Image 1 (cartoon, rainbow, N blue to C red):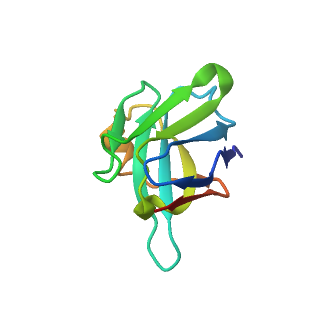
Image 2 (image 1 turned 90 degrees about the vertical axis):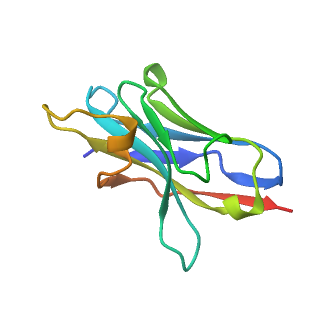
Length: 129
């Protein structure tokens, strides 16, 4: 069973930046989706950004223009660069991985719609005003 593990969270003031990293154990697979999600206590988990094996991406409206999802396959790592952070971005951030079967046409949009079965433990991001 593969795994993912997040790192890079922390505390930052509003308008600051953070880069989250996610180590991914199954990068040797060539058909997959990866996503960043976040959750605050008492609220449902929400998707933030997604990327497929061909680097096609999709962003939630809350992240568009401020966050960038990327991957370095040589380092088996997924990233989320977060700029111009706002207090409402405060949450625990999770990365998730899902291998896709052959015959599935993937895209960032497709990755935003599927169910993910491999999740990390999360990393806390706190943005103060």
